[in-house]
Image (cartoon, rainbow, N blue to C red; front, side):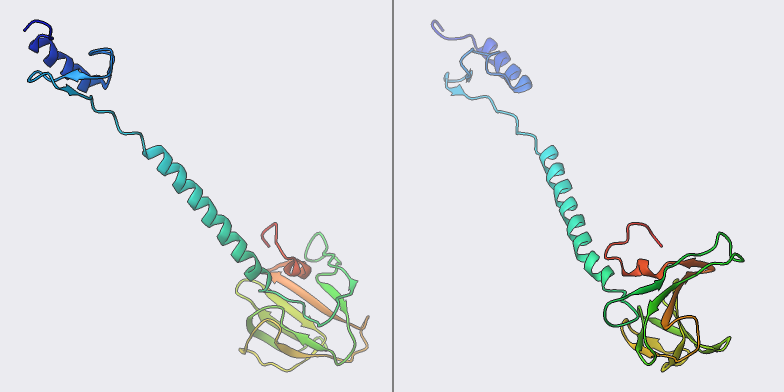
Amino acid sequence: MSGGPEPAKVVRCNRLAEAVWSKEQCTGRGTVLHPQGGHPVLPRRPRPPTVAPMRRTRLVFVSLLTLLAFLMASPAEASRWRAPLDGTLRVSAPFAPGAADWDVGHRGVDLAATAGSWVLAAGAGRVVYAGDLAGRGVVSIDHGGLRTTYEPVDPSVSVGEQVFAGEVIGRIAATGGHCRCLHWGLKRGSTYLDPMRLLRRIVLKPL
């Protein structure tokens, strides 16, 4: 077999090519000779890695879905609450609680209003109180962990009634109180909170 490679060497070369996927290890020209007939056979090339790109694509897809869910949820969260009065709100007295429950403080906000103005539910919930309390008409609504109160109000709702955000719950009562206003309160359990936080478009800290 003058002029051609020895079959034993060709077999070893083919095995080496399949083991390390290298053209140069065999002939230096990127081909391997078949032991029968001398026909050139190209060594098989390894498949390009696909796992890492697929993981990156999956991570990008999940990130986009998370961002889309956040953007869709923000308007829904913002529309869950509304002001208890129509029109532009004017705060007569801001939320200023004392350091302790027994300290003197203002555990709510006073919103300027005239007697007879409609009072609206700030959010959907169930009426848990509607009547007089210490000589003032009061409506209290449970929102599933949060509770809002409104006074002085002549209630138009009853205890146990389900209300939606913006539903009329009464009118500002004509009283000889300290101001012509609606006192609007918010509590979580026994903790007083600033009800104006409900009206922020995006709540940065949990209530």
